[in-house]
Image: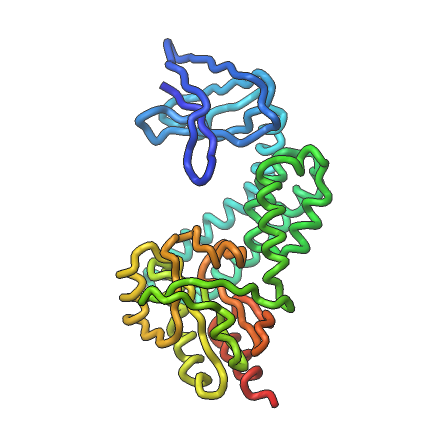
Length: 332
């Protein structure tokens, strides 16, 4: 049995299904509003392939044990997507090769080679991002563009995202991906550098409601989004502790917002990492109300606020955070 599915709210929703006899099957449905990425999977197996579903006769030919490599014809949007994938193949192959070299260098402890590989990988990533942006700019009528821009948006500022959206054809702008992205852009604008940080209220570990604004007044306040389960957050915590210890008495404070689901895990991480500042959470994971308000899409994420709650910097790490906080607390 084969399932035709699409992603909705982070889960796979089945649109249709069909039983294969003698190696073939058919599915037929009413018109779709616009081309959309869907997934064809074999039930009770991990075999699947993705393609753009649109109002045309689409043929999929392949083998069950390599369904991911099935040949798909009949979808204009799928052809556009495949052309995009092919244009990225060389860079993808280079990146995969570097990843293998990186693993080898780590096992041998070759720190010089590790550093070289990281720089090369960063350069390739930059080229890949530019290729994706170019596709969106040069294909305003393609229904592939919303998917590419949606993935790219987590590494972009609101103005650039909005500019790319505005360059798309009206029909493409009306897709659900772009509608959702427009909502996110509006949230991003409200928490851009130079804006006043929006206030919110959330419970501390004892169940007491605490507002962000009640904790302002210090020369510098770090609004820090993190979680016990987030390895990069836990790796960054010692840096935040270092800055806090050095400048707390000079006018630096931290307001921690956890995206945890488990209260016990949250409290244990606070204790283990020696995070001795104010903490709040609604224990709603990625649905954390403050994280949604601040358009947080990955953690750790942070906003550095001045004494009036104005956002002066975002996502500073390590020495960059230390230098900026030092500048803020020591200025007259």
